[in-house]
Length: 394
Image (cartoon, rainbow, N blue to C red; front, side, top):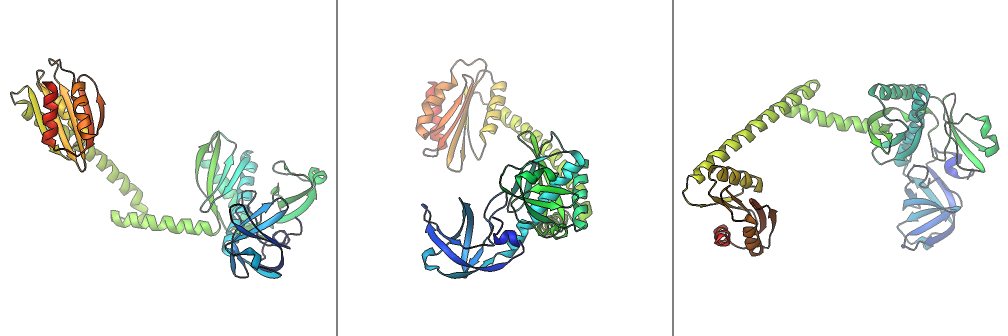
């Protein structure tokens, strides 16, 4: 492990090695094992490197037992002798920034609040750490972020050291290590001592910056999402673009966008309430017009009416006419929907209507003795459906 190139020099971008062996996984993936490698395999929360071997893309790297397998989209057996490896440096350095940033931020929470990190995930867009705490206040998050960025600005060295398990007592580790034998420490002097097998830059300054993006509860802990380095700039650019677009649409300066949006949303809620009330009044007016019919069975067909609207309309009708039955149908695109309701002085069960007409439209529905609703395929006309509903009352 100590001799691996990515541990010898994490800043190494390309290298030469010889093919130790090639193979094929059960799933058909081709892989190459090298005499040594600068490609970091997935592990310890850090994703694998990508790059090329003799210009052949390396798409995955995994440590299987005691060997590191480089998976390629190519016939692996054709690679022999010496090969030249080249890392996707942008990906590798991003991972190094995020991983070192995680060490720095985690140590800040420990130093300030004695809040330990229990898990770490380096995603393609954000990094998360799960911290043992019931809650982290905004003030605590700000304090931890400020402290982490102080450590970055001080440009402290990030050192690595191999020790044995017997030497662990000589170091004030942030958390216990689970491995035995040779143990690799990642050290930020006078700040953080931690067992870690990942890759990191040479100094905290190379992390550039840390920005906390948010928190959420996760299995009794608090998950903190953040970004480091180049991702901070990418996040800033994205948020700047969104804010500029919102401000442009609101015709206000960016600094006033939040207040302007709050006012618009408040106005929208008021408008929506007024619209609901207006629709309710219109339905009542419509129901009275339909109820003025002297027939004991009141029917009506519509287009693009929701079941909820049909239900309200039916309730208003039978409230006006306790001796009547309301049968309402609406065609909505390729669907037929219906509602049947009875007045207080009508004894016929509305369930009989649903049972009669649902098979005619391959439909589903439900309800009570007083009101039913249902819907199905538009395979008969609305007037045919109304006629069938009336037949069920006879």
